[in-house]
Length: 191
Image 1 (cartoon, one colour):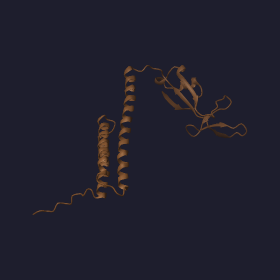
Image 2 (cartoon, helix red, strand yellow):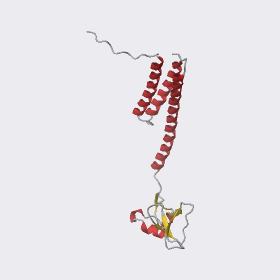
Image 3 (cartoon, one colour):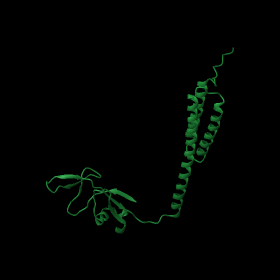
Image 4 (cartoon, helix red, strand yellow):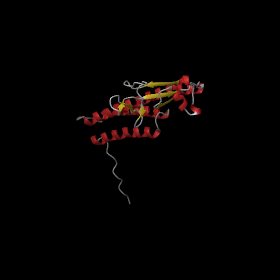
């Protein structure tokens, strides 16, 4: 369906303005005004001024032009039967989009659960090393959701790796902050 904003008000003039390969039958052409203030009348000659959507009509009292909120959309549609393969592909795309959205939503939910738990643990005054065990289970669930999302192609593998790295870095930062993990110092040179 071709939709364009144009200053044409009659079906015959619209039909005549279409290039020959794009011509369609006059019965399939339609004009519709999309503005609630739009008025098409034979007494007011409307001309486009300044681009799409800005129209001017001569004022009845003075001979000057004034702007009107008039926008006309010309739709030229050609009713052609789509092949069955196109319809099938559209059905598949709809199905895949819904599934991919569900997978991504599950992944985001699991990531948020982990990040909120880590933030809560960071703010907790009397945190114990055992508190991170439950968070590690949630991290493994988040990793699983991320890997599934990447496997089906709903997300690029680099994005998945980035998100897993984010969770691991946040966890490690909390462990270092609490003193539960001490990074290895550089090994002393032995000679």
